[in-house]
Every structure is written in structure tokens, then in C-alpha cells.
Image (cartoon, rainbow, N blue to C red):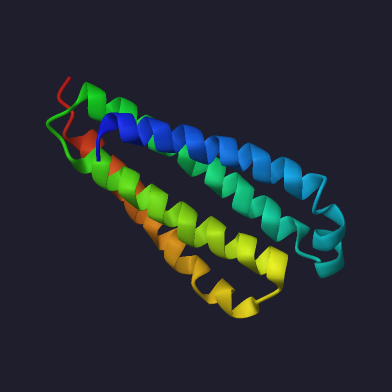
Length: 127
């Protein structure tokens, strides 16, 4: 994955997070309250933001340390995690389809493994 693509995806996912957060707070407030899934939706937005920022960090590190592919692996896992973790929580919150919650942990695992690649990359930095 190119650095430019990582930055663009980080920006898009962050903008989407702002839009979804605002839409959830205003446009979907009644629906989310009626299903009791307001907290679930908010968690999805938070984790999307956290990992969009982490994706941006991966891009900056990949630019600084281009010989290492660890940052790109972490970036890919953060993107996968956002789609699986946050995406499944959005679906659960908006549709009430509970079986989709069973795949949410897979997104969490992708996040954790992504952070592991960040640790691995950091361990290779020579100062």
C-alpha cells in the first residue's frame, strides 16, 4: 500500500467517522434509543476514529522508515479492523441483526495484530 493511499484512507475514514457520529447523534437518535444501541454505535465511531488516526501514524512512519513493511502491514490490519469491528457494530446498531455481532471480535483481533506490527516496526528503529 502506498503512503499516499494510507493518508487518503485515513482522511476518508476520519471524515466518515465525523459524519456517522453526527448522523448517529442527530438523525438516528430516535432509532438508536428505541433499539437501545446508542452506546454500541458510539463505540463503533470511537474505534473507527482511533484506528483512522493509527492509519495516519502508519503512513508517517512508512515515510520516515521506508525500508520496513511493518507499518504497511499494520495499516492494512487497521483498515480491515475498521470494516469488520466498526462495520459490524454499525449494522448491529441500525438493523438489530444480532448475529453480525459474532464477527465483531475478528475486527478486534485485526486491531490487536496491527498494533503488534507497530511494536515490531518500532523495535527495528535504530536511533
